[in-house]
Each structure stands twice: as C-alpha cells, then as structure tokens.
Amino acid sequence: MTAPEETRVALITGGSKGLGAGLVEAYLAAGYVVETCSRSATDQVDLWAKEFPDHFGFASVDVSGSAAADAWVKDVARRRGRIDVLVNNAGVAPEGVIALFSDDQIDQVVDLNIKGTAYVTRAASRVMLARRSGSIVNVSSVVGMSGYRGLSMYSATKAALDGMTRGLARELGSRGITVNSVAPGYLRTEMSHGLDETQLTQITRRTPAGRLGEPSDVARAVLFLTDPANTYITGQVLVVDGGLTA
Image (cartoon, rainbow, N blue to C red; front, side, top):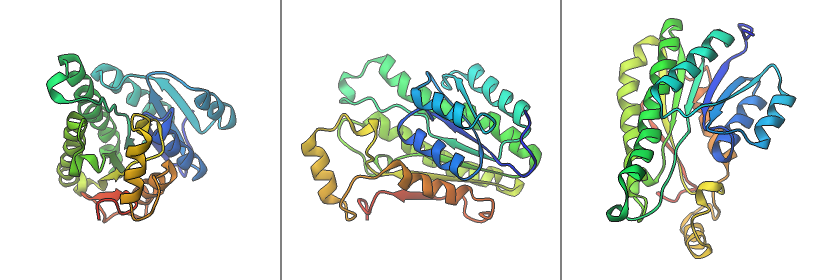
C-alpha cells in the first residue's frame, strides 16, 4: 500500500530491539509510516504489526549483504511510494582486544557497521534524490570519538560513520537531503549488558546527568534532525551522552 502524500516514511535499520526499538516507537508515535529490519523478529515487532497494521512493516534482512539491503529498500520504495527518513542504526559491538580478534570478528563488525550502512544509504539516497528531499541520520557513538578499551574495532567503525556523514552532507546537500550523525553515550540497552556493575557505576559517576541514557533520549535527537523543517543543519555530529564527553 502506498502511503498518502502527507504521511512521511521512515526507514530504520536494526529496529527490533534496544535503541532501534526506541527509534521505531518514537517515529510511530510521531505519525510516520515505519519500515524496519533486523536479522530476526522479536515479540515487539509482532506487537507493532498488530497495533499499526497500515503504518508498520518489518523484514528479516541482513543489511551487511549488498543484494539483500538493496532489495529491501527497493521493496519499501515500491510499496510506500517514498522514503523521507533513513536512520542507519544496525550495528554490532564485539568486545575484546584486537590482538585476539579473528578475521571473522573483524569482518563482522566492518561488514555490518560500515558496509551495511553504505549499502542501505546508497539505495535509499537514490529514492531521495529523485524526490529532491530527505533526511539521513547515522547512529555513531561517543566511543568513536574518545575510544574505549576492548572496543577498538567498534570505535573505528563508528568514527568512519561520522566521516561518511560529513562527506554525504556535501554530496547530497544541493539536492535537499540533510545528513547528520547522532553519537549516543552509554545507554541502558542490550549494548551495555557486557559492562559489569562496577563499570556502569563508574560511567554514571562521570556523567554530569547522573544516569545512563535511555533510547528515548536519542530518539528525540534523531526526530529533531529529521524534522521536515530542518533544512539547514547537516554534516554535524550531535552527541547525546548526558555530558560525559563535555
């Protein structure tokens, strides 16, 4: 079903749980049609499908594969008639010192975090270019700015996304497309479960806001950057970390 002209369509990768689920919730609440993907569905995905039968779509897709990513974006564009917003959220964060990483572990984080983002962005930008409008947000991380022991490969990929953001902002700006990054701090999601209580307590103490972030904190920033009224903020990295890196 094609979305009505006034209904904006948001494409969100990795939306089945964690931060991605928070992003899906925020865009549905804002009245968007939301299409999301992940490698497998969750109970939350099933609930959204029942609650928003006309405004929600899910596909089991591994965007680290070029053909799969391209096919998914083309299918959304065909069914919905437009893509107004792309949020590149899908990613993995394998922990461990680089000396012990296998080739497969390195490939996994690069293939999903960087190449997957590039594949989806390539396909979605073609739709946006034809309409001469659109908003893209890459979810990076404060870890890509300051580093963290045991997350060197993850840090490298997130820093790369910020570089991609700046390049794309220049590449697409003249066609009415904004491109920004949002760099979350430490959130209370599955991504922080690898940290023990001592580490979480230390992070909380160092954070001026005095707490870990919630997906809703990041979602508000992403919604702001993709608001149709925003036509002048582009090429920026908006840090959402409670002041941790201040």
